[in-house]
Structures are given as structure tokens and as C-alpha cells.
Image 1 (cartoon, rainbow, N blue to C red):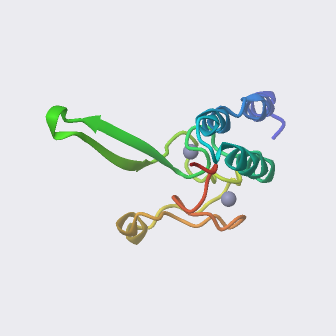
Image 2: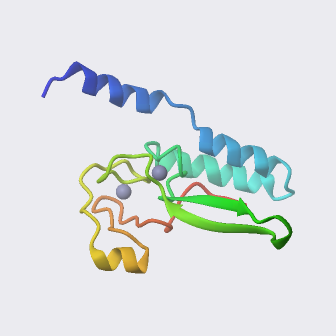
Length: 126
Ligand SMILES: [Zn+2]
Ligand SMILES: [Zn+2]
């Protein structure tokens, strides 16, 4: 209550530029569908201004590892950029903890504010 540091942190979060959306816009520029996607990105960011800048609101981050001649392996991991209990799409604090079965289905808990689950939705991609 009334902790000045807490307020400062919240302000910082809002001041972060839309890095993820910027990167998506940049890659959209090279595609002929680019304009349409950029409009979608802007609309999405306007709807979810508190989205996680690390995963673009998806709740998942893409990973890849090169295996030389065998090619590159791709997979998704749960984004850990936000503290536990924070929604990566709407920024709501107070999401339920993960249940065992949710680890198995790899969906994670549902946000009680926007009904988002990991992998459901995020900054539009090409
Ligand atoms: Zn995230
Ligand atoms: Zn949410």
C-alpha cells in the first residue's frame, strides 16, 4: 500500500515501447499482405495495451535450435517474462496457479478477465 516503488514499476511497464508489435510491423512491410497485417496489429495493440512485450501476448515464446545438417528444430515454451499470476494478454493480476492437468494439456490457466490461455491469441503475425 502506497509503496512508491510499486507505482514506479507500473509506470515503467507502460513506458516500454511496443517492441513486439514494432518487430511484427517491420516483417509485415516485406509482405504484400503487409498493410492489412499492420492494421490488424495496431487494432490488437489498441485493444490490449498492457500485453507482454516479450511474447506479444501469446503467453508462449518461440525457440529454435540448429542441428547442423539435420536442420533447425522449432518449439514453443511458456513465456516467463511476467510474474506468475499475470495475464500476458490483458495484464490482469490474479490468474489462478497452474494445475497439474494444465501442464499436461499445455494450455495453462485461463485468465478470469479476458479468458485468454497460453497460445490462444497475441499480436497478429503473418
Ligand atoms: Zn509473455
Ligand atoms: Zn487476460
